[in-house]
Amino acid sequence: MKLHLSALASALTLAFAATSAQAELNAVTAQKGAGNSAYTVQQNSTGLIKASISQTGDNNKAGDAAAKTGGIVQIGVNKDISASIAQQGNQNNAGIRQEKALTTTASLAQTGNQNTATVRQNSASKANAALSQNGQKNSATLDQQGVTDFEILAKQTGSDNKLAVNQLNSANQGAYVTQNGVNNGVTVSQSQTAYAGVTVNQSGTGNNVKATQKDANNVNSTIAQNGTGNNALTDQSGNKNLSAINQKGNNNLTTLTQNANANQSQVTQDGMANKATVFQTGTNANNSLANVSSIIQTGNGYTASLTQNGSNNQSGIVQY
Image (cartoon, rainbow, N blue to C red; front, side, top):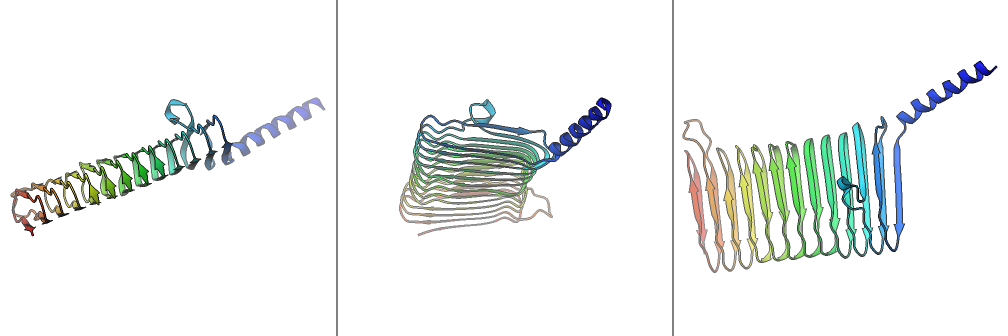
């Protein structure tokens, strides 16, 4: 009888292990008030992986996941994984790190006070990251590497805004950033990408944007700025890239560099200190496609410089 029971126990253990290996990992953390902090690690599952952290009020934190000071860390080993962090009020801070998955989804929402945020997604077939920050000392870093189909949607509203996005060795989709008021910022760098885009929409005060796309083909950047410090530097390399910059009001400046053939750019500036420099290269090969560029400036400081190299290029400058 003991032998039979032993055999049965072993069978049940094996069955349970097999079931749990297939089971979905799902972790939910909710915290309210005072010293808040949270840390979730999930890995080694053959099923779906999900985690969420919700924090309301006071010292929040779901800090830097990589440093294990809080946040969500998920390692999917070719499974779908998703993570979400929602924070409201006070010292905020958050971190999500996701690796080795078919599809990775990260959602991070912060409202009010010291805000900062970090999302890192590596080695996935598809990665989506959505970030929403609201008021005060905003800041954000989003990083995607080795992703076949990648997307970042980031929205910041008021105060010291800042943002840095890095997308490396990835393709399709891109980064979409909206900022609103006060110190603004944004730095986006895409490297070794194809069929990818950067879209930035800024509003008032410190403005700034730097979007660099390197070793890239068929990429585009669309930048619209509104009022005060303006600034926009964009650098693209490769072929068949597109860039459009639209600045309105105050200290405008644009520097745009493109490389190789069949690139297109358009710069529009309205009012105040204006300035715009576009530089395109290209080859002299007979079958090379033309680069096209135009600058339109309205009112005040003016200055425009447009340089093209190669063959069959087209350009236009309008000032009034």
